[in-house]
Image (cartoon, rainbow, N blue to C red; front, top):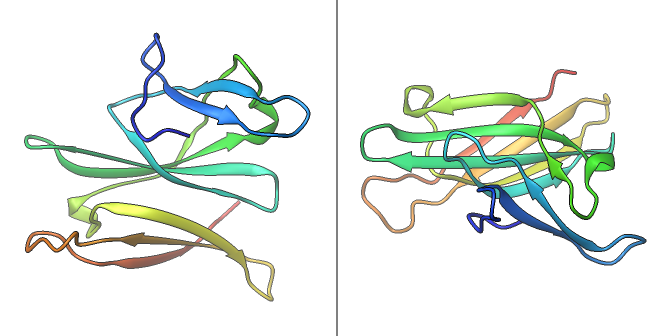
Length: 132
């Protein structure tokens, strides 16, 4: 998945590499969010971590859940936001996401940011339990 590469309709370009049906598809882009990372859940859904920045609006992040089964050459996939946050929520420029399942069966999401050697950014590690 591209961070900001757009197709002719303004959606984010993505590719299926290998497998039975390789090819290009798109992820619907809304609210000027760009994809920074993604993680596959044990359920087969894909979570995408998105971020945006503007001088007027500040920093925002969200996580959207996409059905892996919807991804096919030529498709435009979309899914619900399961998490939204901005600077009021003590986030930063979140760049990475991962998931693991605990011994108790809970799915834990981990997000990380990078301060990019900037005085106005921070390194953060955030963890949340995914509630189904």
